[in-house]
Length: 166
Image (cartoon, rainbow, N blue to C red; front, side):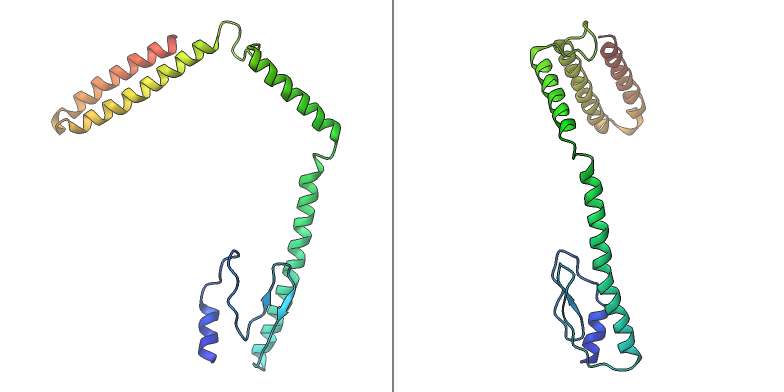
């Protein structure tokens, strides 16, 4: 009926993941952009608007496919040179070998993996302390909260100074 068609037009369009519900006065378009079929019993200016809609639907997939083909060729073009890819592969393998052999020294000779792990452990300890102190402040009565926060800040800053000097 005419009211059912109006309701279908007003309802939100389904997402692209779902198939469009079949309707007698609606054009169904497949994922390839081809028209599957259209039946219309409406005449007059309303059908002219439908014809314009049909042309727009027909033109959109063509435009989208042209754009996506262009994008695909642009994205693909930077990896077409095989020698560049082989050179990158050699570089990455060399980097991996340096890492496993211990030659990799991003922070100079004086900074070892053990030292970096120690710093990371201290950072984790500081983070845990921060959360623990914050949880304790929640239990403190409101009139003593400012003093507790100041004391906690001093503890955190002391730990941070220790961390920065290591």
